[in-house]
Image 1 (spheres, chains in turn yellow, green):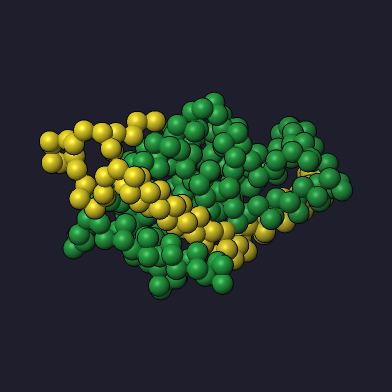
Image 2 (spheres, rainbow over the protein chains, first blue to last red):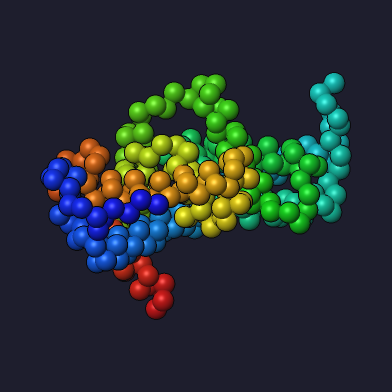
Length: 73
Length: 200
């Protein structure tokens, strides 16, 4: 993986992010940020998982079951 | 004649159905991340659920049913998309609607920003990151679901993580009245709050 954070300073100012310090501290900061994004990502997903399932889902499954139970037409 | 006649429900069918029902919330969540739209997502999740039910004879009990149903849902999504869904750049509008569904009043900002940033990722990176980073799948399972090599999943996840971080730090998406960096700040603050709540 290319980690040129601590390498030569880039003269192109558009490439620099003033919010991220360079070197060790920068890597640690990036790690913390990745961790935070991970927490939010799981939270976003879990929020939908924790929603009540609309009745429609079980209704559809029940109808399929009835069809199977009657052994077809 | 429309294929083989349905057989009466067996004990296996009942066990299958019970397990399928427990997976519905996860299918809905995965569908929501793929479509970005709650209504389209539930349609997709229902289709996938029925496809899984109809294909239950080909499922081997004891294997990973969650990964199996996710693969069905994903295949369904891409085949439908190829057929009809022209959801190229409509994601903006869809994202707005998804945001409204967030009902945690303390967290909306950070979630908004994350959703926006997710939508800037290429599709295959987004799904890989969701499966591994949010769905709790191992790289190997995610590779099965996406029908690609494990190494491919790994590199997609890692590229997605880097791109997401860069996007959030730059504020590299359309969002009026927001300074770049706000997104990351609110995500950091919110993640702290969430991990605190989880431990407490």
